[in-house]
Image (cartoon, rainbow, N blue to C red; front, side, top):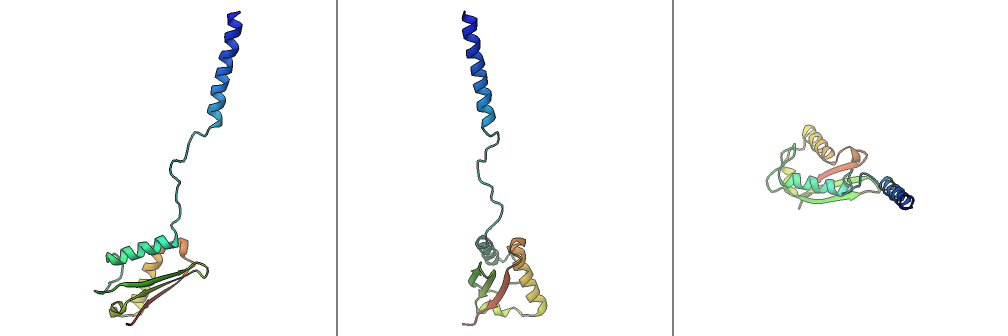
Length: 122
């Protein structure tokens, strides 16, 4: 009689173990994977690179970013610098390099944005 009682309990326990193992996911996401940086994070990255002089173009002494205006609806980014930035000779090659550098920092995710780089007089 004991054998008939132990066997169903044993089979039920085994079935319960297998059922609970198969219903729970094997791989759990511990940290959510972030795939794309926001346009604001990219603007912050540009500002850090600018302050550390880590850009492909020369930055004159005393140059500062005045404002970075981001319009996500119009898909435009305007970067305004102070007057010291205007000491760069704005030739076609320099301007092309500036825009290329900025577009590279923002990356292909923001390639459809319109960029504007300006220097402001006091």
